[in-house]
Image (cartoon, rainbow, N blue to C red; front, side, top):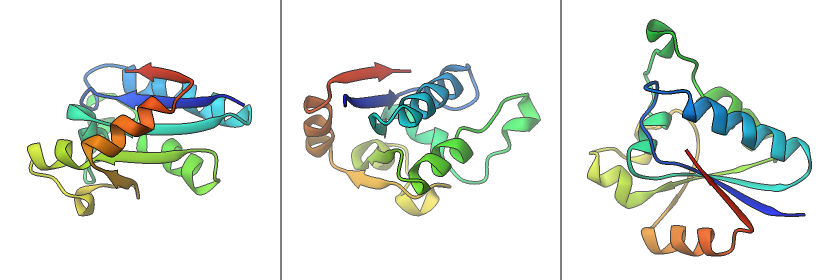
Length: 118
């Protein structure tokens, strides 16, 4: 079993990167791989509650990722410093995630066998 970490660094709805990364994470989870999804930098906006992606023709990634986490197929992490730098907190997020410090996130990435970034 490989330890995959999917890193989301881009804001929601501007590109298909978030959706494609969510699909790749779902595929890895379905193949019994260890999957973590880490939200850093502007990627934390992917998790912000109250968004309406359909209004701009986009698809929300929060639903599929939340389902993966609830089914035990993935772990979701968000970096505390990235939230704070964007005036957000864990309460602003639409999906339950584990909040990690930058140092803890670095440790998570250091333990990964495979890192994919979007």
